[in-house]
Amino acid sequence: MKPVLLLVDDDEVIQTQMKWSLNSDYDIVSAEDRAGALEAFKRTKPAATLLDLGLPPRPNDSDEGLAALSELLSIDETAKIIIVSGQGEKKNALHAVGAGAYDFLCKPIDPDELKLLLRRCVYLADLEREYREVQRSVRANVFEDMLGTSPQMQGVFAFIRKVAGTTAPVLLLGESGTGKEMAALAIHRRSQRKEGPFVPINCNAIPENLLESELFGHEKGAFTGATTQRPGLIETASGGTIFLDEIGDLPARLQVKLLRFLQEQRFQRVGGRQELESDARVIAATNADLKGGIAKGTFREDLYFRLAVVVISLPPLRERGEDTSLLAHEFLQRYAVQNGKTSLSFAPEALRSINCHSWPGNIRELQNRVKRAVIMSESKRITTRDLELGAQGDGLPATTLKEARENLEREMVQQALKRHLGKISSAANELGIIRPTLYELMEKLGISRE
Image 1 (cartoon, one colour):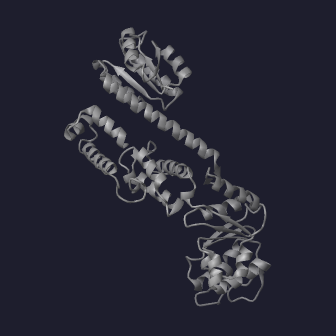
Image 2: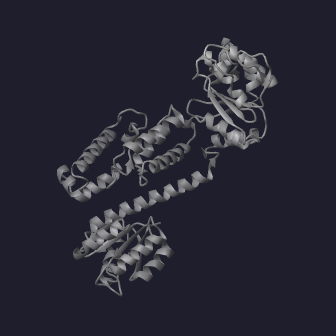
Image 3: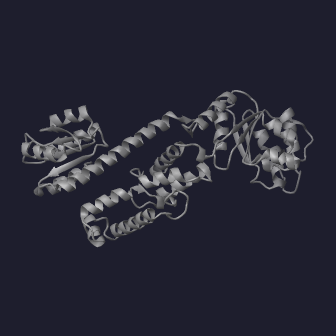
């Protein structure tokens, strides 16, 4: 289906000319005044609107056209409205752009410039519509702050729902950056312990001589510097959940002590003799091969089976299909708001790179790349360069002549626009091309006009 174009103008000659020029590309709906424009706009939801400022009953000034603009934007603030004005109304046209119009054209209209501007309008409208659909999909597919529409993640969510209501220990497996801590937190939030504490600890981040005290606490005088009695994290997590990340790095001596706690819910502080109890549920996670550790003698088999009552595997991002784009858009929105760049979007080539990249660092890598791109981007479109990804999303330079040429063209156009402060005519003149050609090139390369 052709996109709908609303033409608001009371001049029959202009309407006829526009229809003749644009009819092959657009389904044209016309209106002659503000009331007709509002009715047609609500009825057809056009992809773009051409609005003449001089409308009846006051065709000699811009008040009626500006009022129509305001009312159309009140219906849809994302509407793409192009103002059409006479040469003497340029000041009013600029005022309209400041009030929310997409752009303006002065009469007499250059047909080629109009067609190019309309194509950009419709393209942008399609991108925004797709983005809104993504956001609706995001809201519909958020599970305890975890995003995923892929079958793999839906399976993870189903496992979490089933195991959350029990007290069984859970072992989360997955590569670094796949979201194991978020899965543990989701289990806690869905459990009957949700009002209790959620206490995470990374077993690889604390020196061995301090880890025992961190987990089980210590008595006053237990070692040099132990000037007071201190409860450990297992004690602190009583009534809630303790999350033991990187459990594969737990020293052998502490594996014995953790095994006893899992069996009896009892433990002793370092330097203490009193038996203490804690009603803490244990969720453990690792990116290591625990069965390989058992074979090598670095991980206790009996502890493994105590921890692995329920095993949930978190899939790597490269196996999650469209979840990659879903997460990328979510991170873009989050960091764009934080950095006051709410109009940012991904250029088409950036999305292709995101979908092609293997993401060895998984969700954490994607999150960090998007965050950096938002901070560093100098336009309203996030590019492959902003993401520091190669043309095929693998971090390598372009591998084909076409990709190399596009990268060079993109660099030259961006630098020319920067030198001329975004002035299209001046940049086109420096590059030795005409203005419409530069517009076409910018659209192809995903470079914003802003």
